[in-house]
Image (cartoon, rainbow, N blue to C red; front, side):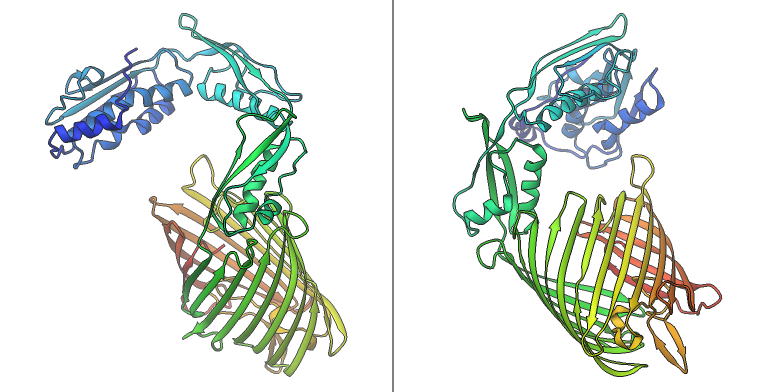
Length: 600
């Protein structure tokens, strides 16, 4: 086996650059042979090779190519070990010379050809696969067993799993005490015998804070929520970091365990915090052929009272040059105080002034709401609030004023890999809002659910199928006692693309159009990445609006479909969708939508 460690010193590399005058190399000939290797292993070796990545780079310098060739020994060996091959022969020849034998101080002026030959040899299997002592109910990975392929990655996974299982029951300093890994090349077998030292079971000790900053120490402790005196838990440690990051007050949060436990069996926890700038503002825009132009902005203070409290003002103007009735306005303010009652509960106070000039109604409203949000675990969160609202409405039912007391309750499940560009996972949100209207003394409730699923076959996210289902209903109260923004319409970017904005409503006869008491929506997308920066999307949407609460009265469906492109940025994909109506009630218009983030 020919293995030479690559050049590791950055100083050495800098000296080489200074000593050798760079000259454009141009594309060199490249060949990789992997005799006896399965096709999947050959593909992995080629994908790992730095030389393979440089073969078509016309600007590559000889020093870069030689350094890549010398580095490839270890990179290719790591791939082979992970596949269970421990007796390979690796040869990397640069213009006929073995790269490992070439002096890094004498770089050729040009390189014409590089040949890589990898003979993996036999695949090794475990003759023994031991790891002990293990925590109660701990089991090693399925692949870590006698007779299984002796993959290096499986050995690492077995160690990580065993240590993690000990830490989960309070043994914070569990570690490997000894390991014996013996390869029998004649029999192509690997003996693995790993011994662990669990260490004592520990309890959380003191929370050690950084020097005084703009956030008060007592508030940091309340937000962090370290349960001093309770058994050590990696999950609780991770949640501490999440709570602090969730406030948005800190640019960097590092939670560290003390190196040495205390004599009383406790383990102190150290925080390293870097505060973000307290003030922030942002601007946004979205464009649709029907909805027109929407402009939004916000200003925020992340540490208003010295306890990581957040105050945010939002303003939005939408429907500019659109065909949605008129221009809409929104002005809102929200105050959030984290760690109220417990570390995972946030108190909020919100107010909002809004004017909605929609095709079927004009509504001016004001709202004041106070509530609590609670993070239940990594995937579930919820909120409950009490709200007072006033609406001045003009629609086909006439002019009226409505005053509500509402109790909005929301439960959210979210395990998506990314919020703006999900490729795997699920999202579900259920909103229940009981209400009492003062003028008519009527009661009712609005229920709305939004569920989404994302599926990417295989290990790659090049192809993603996304599905969305929406359902809503309003029960109780007469139609004249329900504000239009509590009823359901369909059409536009949030429901059925290609159909005119809020074009589907309920016709009560005589030209009277109102929102429906029931709603069903369904959307499907297939997203395909054609490069790291660009994706193409095909989609179809459907929407139903019904007159009665449970969709068993008069109602109607409409449909839309289209194509889109996405340009992926660090902020999220920039979206362009072009859609048209589909079906017997389809019109001739083609709509387009531009925004940031996937449509759902």
